[in-house]
Amino acid sequence: MAKKADIGSKRLISLAPEAWVTWVTQQPDLTVTEFLTSDFQWISRENDVLIKVRSPDQGEFLVLNELQLRYDKHMPLRIRAYVALAEERYHLPVYPVLINILPPGKTPQIPSTYRSEFMGIEASQDYRVINLWEVDVELVFRDNLSTLLPFVPILKGGNEPQQVQQALIQLRANEQLQELEPLLSFFASFVLDASVIQEIMRWDMAVLRESPWYQEILKEGLQQGKIELVVNLLTEQFGVLPFETRQRVENLSSEQLNTLAKHYLTLNSIEELERWCDDQTS
Image (cartoon, rainbow, N blue to C red; front, side, top):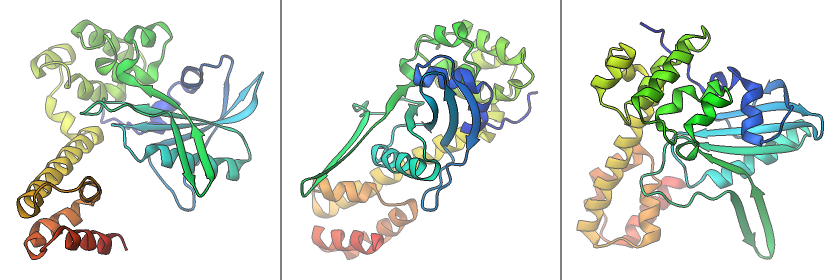
């Protein structure tokens, strides 16, 4: 039985950092010199990985990696903030990359830029977007991108037993990579039957329930179900909600949704609902 995996973003990237930064920047001959902290005074997120690299052509710069299980509509603004804070703190140019692991349910167009304008003042931030479901699985094996081996089942063309088997062989051939078997199993569960995964990996599928990725998916599903329940209750109470009002409800925390579900009958109008939402964010 494989050991329980440390599958944080920093741990994954640190398995083959030069190959990773070369892939996400499309720049050759990069040397990783340091993993820097991305914990800033106002922002701290586990999914950020900030790496200082050196290039023969560009000199020293930072690669800001943001790994998301699924795309978050607030991410363009967050990346703008992360880039500015990193530049101010380290006084180096920043190359930001957003890596989305699973496709969003409704498949919206994922932007690669942030733009805002207020009273004639404009702000903008470009960043590279990599959607793993669009990455050809053969690239992983050809370019020895060991960091991506656990994601093989969800890559383009990776949802076949033979591809998962090949990824497993490469993981088990490297002692450092063996701990990533649970993550490979987890993503294989999205595309293959449990019996097929068990046959390939000789795994007890209960191990997947210990995975932080599994817990995040479960939490995400529960949150989405809770949102739909509360929106349905409010629709019965007030009729179809205005778009802006529905968005405000969808942005409530799990605890706030619980409170709203208990007390929505005390609200007599959409205006009262909006004032209630105002109170939650004040």
